[in-house]
Length: 261
Image 1 (cartoon, helix red, strand yellow):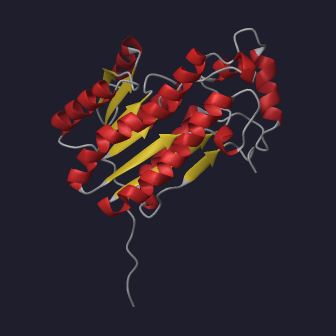
Image 2 (cartoon, helix red, strand yellow; image 1 turned 180 degrees about the vertical axis):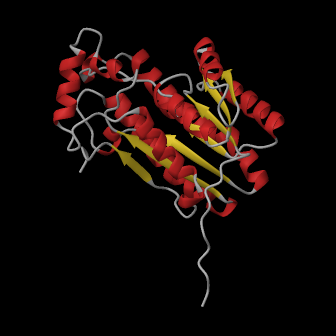
Image 3 (cartoon, rainbow, N blue to C red; image 1 turned 90 degrees about the horizontal axis):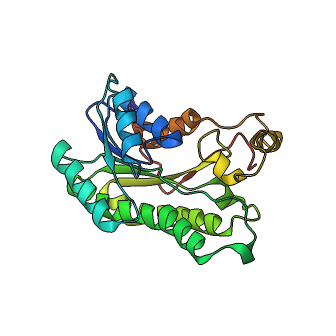
């Protein structure tokens, strides 16, 4: 009788590049991975904020280094990726958490500038990082990528057409890359966060809206009776990067308290 192989989730000594690492779900992911012994490069367009995050996590089990990165700039993505490769000798994990939100806006009032910005950050930025990192993972014959889409990509809401289209594109990109890279030993999966108590929430609600009232509306629609926390989302990322998910690729993981059921 064959003995079943025991899965050991050992993150120590691994290297991760996490975008959007200065706050919210990205920062929670950086904290979670660093606590597991991962050497984390936290990238964010806000250099001061990501440097401060790295300082706050200086005592973590794994190292944390902050870098400035505009994910809409392909050259910057390639440069930062090459620097991480040279410094750590490889990139085991890529977490594309950086994103841009919008408030509910009727179609006829969506400007070209808003549309282009939402698509560039949420879809193009995810593509840019995947394109920059994958050659390094291919050279090692392994790797895991977690992209961030959104619950609205699977269950659309009115007034968010550019954002919904961008995040639906991230899901399609994830599934395509999973097929492209499976034989290379690289897994690609996707997180679909629901309403989350993070700095992104007020951006969806809008500057003039009552945030507490909006939170109450969100919570009333969630079977588990609360908003997600950034730590809830980071837990999903940990699973998808782990050896426990070693045969999982091309999947979308909804973390929404049952709202999408």
